[in-house]
Amino acid sequence: MSRGYKWLIATVAILFIVALPSRVVAQHTLTLTGGTGVATARFYPSEETKWMWGSETFGLSWRFYSDKPRFVGAVGVDLEYLERGFNLGYTYTSEYVDMPNGDKKEVRHYQFYNRKVNTVMLPLVWQPHVYAAKKRLRIFIEAAFVLSFNVSSHYSYENDRYPAGKYEWKVPRDNRFGYGLSGGAGFAVLLNQVEIGFKAKYNFGYSDILKNRNKYYSGSTDGRENPFYYSPLRSPLDNINVMLTVGWRFNKRGFDEWFVVRPKKEKRLDEFNFSAQTGAGSGSGAGGGQSFGGRQGSGRR
Image (tube, rainbow, N blue to C red; front, side, top):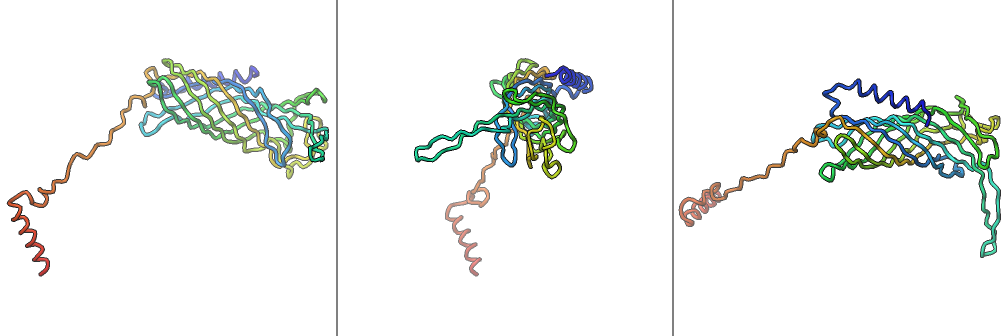
């Protein structure tokens, strides 16, 4: 990760802490995240691809925990640096293998083009959670709508078949901005005001890294940075990452939601007293029967 991204995240963290009023800040956490994972792209029409390993990520997470007992969890926003990209089988050689039935099967051996995309991600997060181990462990899931901006990109070819280089962005061909969804789960161990945890997350892209062929039909005039002769119709990027997290909780005693006692449902204590309601408790049993019979007789008349 470049020093520029680290300085950006550190500056945002300092400004955020200074700007928050002291009365409100108690319900907030700031968390540093860092990890690695895999990346790929979903092309349509389908292309030969494989996972790109070593996709680094680093970021800052802010969460706000409501003190209302009816609300469980947090809302927040993340600022992340994420390496995205794909490995594309741009050419291949064929080998024909004899089958038991006498036919020959084609086996393709691909040469891969690799492209890494350095992206700033802005997930808008909802994070419901539950507590365990006497509130020393917090288990959560996450769902987010994600905005992204592709800062820079580099490309290379397998076995150094062609020289590697910086990917030059073209407005008619490339998309700088993107959007998508993400989901994940994790846990955090609570040590006084410090949270140390682990989480896994899947980023599912909806926007395309390349503009479709209606806008940029042919790449035949491009250089080695673009291996597509015709632009794909769809080219969203996906990532799966695992991360370690270290957070700071601004409330020393814990979040207020810990100390809100939910009202218990009151049980109905009153019982229906048949005798009191019908008058069956007064007088003899026969008298009660005569009275009841009298009412029936008056009803027949």
